[in-house]
Length: 272
Image (cartoon, rainbow, N blue to C red; front, side, top):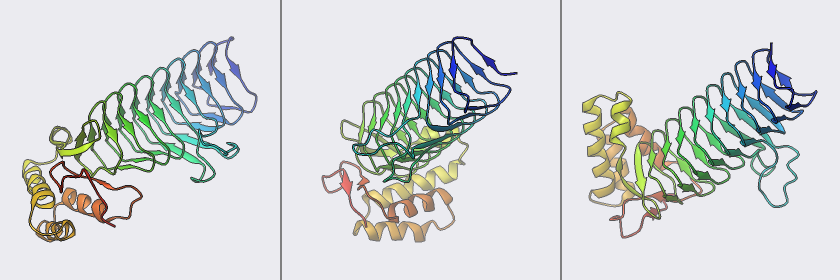
């Protein structure tokens, strides 16, 4: 049986699994769907067309749902889909999608979102991500699986952060970050590979050595940037992590690519 505190407000149209908990003074809107094992602490607001997956826990004063923070968008078609096993801490805010962006904000499974984090409209956030306190993510951002973002970092709208990348605290990310990349700085620059993350995920040592060599080949080798990327793909055709990086670089994008500081004196380069 659902455990709903008598001081909570739950609209009759909300869809609640029988095995959920809702704390005092929380407000659950008509378009909300809560799956099995969801736990809502006190003083939480969940509104709009919002689905929350199994076992997700939401802490006090989080606000999930509603229209985007987008001038001129009425928020009538804003949706949010949040996966299973997430931890959403105090004062986290997640906005629904905009008409311009397709109307959907999506969060994957097993994420950990610390206090005061914000996910803007139309973002797509992967599985197993970690946001430290005060991470701010603008609209239309794509964050792939396993990304770790340090406290007070901010991500520019339309940016794309590749799988298992690491963003340092108090970093401004204004460009796309390669998979397994490590970025920090006032205006984020690519500092190298997330070697700690690679080891934690069990990537074999020989593949990590190849990745380091490939990184040097791409960002410090001879010839144009496009030539270096092509040579790297040809040299390591059987290393999936290297191919993932080169395909990411060669894909179409709306933001520039985050580069090392030494690359032509500029942290960003447009490759399309």
